[in-house]
Length: 195
Picture 1 (tube, rainbow, N blue to C red):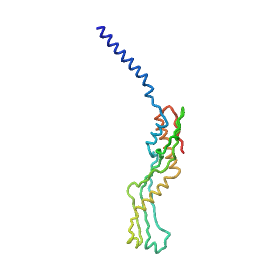
Picture 2 (cartoon, rainbow, N blue to C red; picture 1 turned 90 degrees about the vertical axis):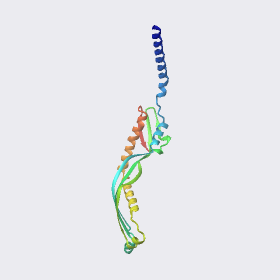
Picture 3 (cartoon, helix red, strand yellow; picture 1 turned 180 degrees about the vertical axis):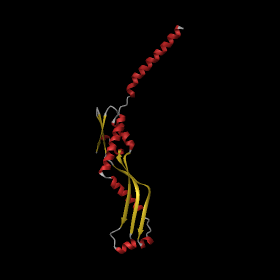
Picture 4 (cartoon, one colour; picture 1 turned 60 degrees about the vertical axis):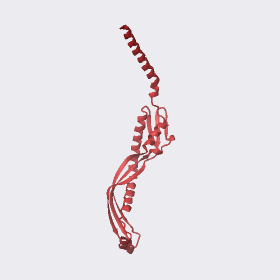
């Protein structure tokens, strides 16, 4: 009985020593080192980071006022349109380069481009009123939808390009990237600068 007890204790001792040696050898291997390449890959994988979505209720009137009175009556066209346009603004992280990430002992500095408009789209239906001249209605039937849609989007993008909207999108991008890179290395301060 004592022999069995000694064998069991010897096996437990050998297993404990093996586990301790394995842990000591592998503890450095499990520590994750953050390099600029790791950060670059994480940022590029995000692609275009949308940080501000704005929705505008737009209305436009498109009329050719340069032509003569008779030309307007025969070939003229006046389009009035109303619609809701969504504009997404953010930063293109796919364009981040190796030299945009600098790692020091206590800080990670990430340089990113300033915010810009990513895309715009109509949300819901567009209401279009189209008044055409007599000959235009007969020979060049045009509902005016495409022209109205393009003008609504153009006007919404102009509104979204204001300093206030771009500043909010840029600030949101800074916070999001600081948070993302901060998760990768919690021991270093993260600073985001704009090119």
